[in-house]
Image 1 (cartoon, rainbow, N blue to C red):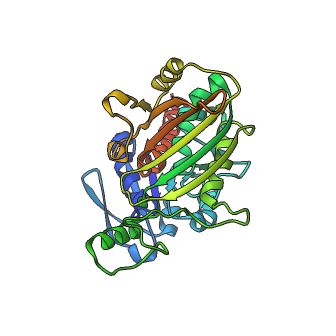
Image 2 (cartoon, one colour):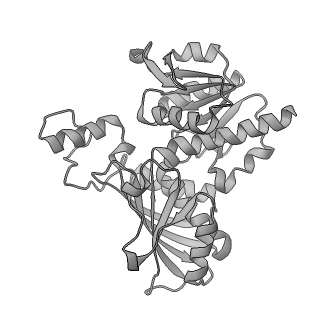
Length: 336
């Protein structure tokens, strides 16, 4: 297969190349790294080879079977349809297509089966959810299937890596006492910013509303979600404090069993050992870690939990590559 990686020189693009090699290295014959004009010719490492970055036009003309986009919403809106029209299946990491009713929004462990009946024989676009949404719904899905989630209150503690390399550099500059380019309007080292993404007219940020809209689309439109998204001076992953109200009561033993048995979820929950998920623990891993499990004693049928995941891996690159894996498997089955 021939796969284009659009945005190959960014943090997510680089991680996609790494995860692609780990999980699909034997199936991908040609990787086409694509980036902006200023990166043309830059060498990208994949499978012990250095491959030069090419232009969007050259990648389109190469007619890859798959294209994994991670270059921002504007780029996706302009170019994803062109690739799809040329017969390529696009897996898009931006928010551009997530709430389009004609596009699937996929977390493979939850609704990957939707790809089984979808017709991508002539190309198409699949949306990858927001990083914070992915880890939230991974923890909610097995519990929703058993108890029916009614309302979710979530507060996120999001790594600077979610903003990109310049944000990581701002944090490092501040820690070293250097003057540098500022991505955030305020200092991030030794601080927290109660804002991720742009403010909307309702007072929420786009990041907070993504958690609401995308959770409804992936799991159930009846679920009510309210979110507060906060940026913290961390580079290892995103954390979430989640309060979940169910229609039906639960036992803590069964909650732990359901989460332990859920694919892609790992329970780290031993108060007696002071064990709970942390970004340091999640960094570089594909699992979603859940802990601090406890009944909300102020509200009936309500659970508190703490959810942590590497936002560059499961929150972006790994989820996209998992979608690609399902498509590759489907293609091989059709070829047999």
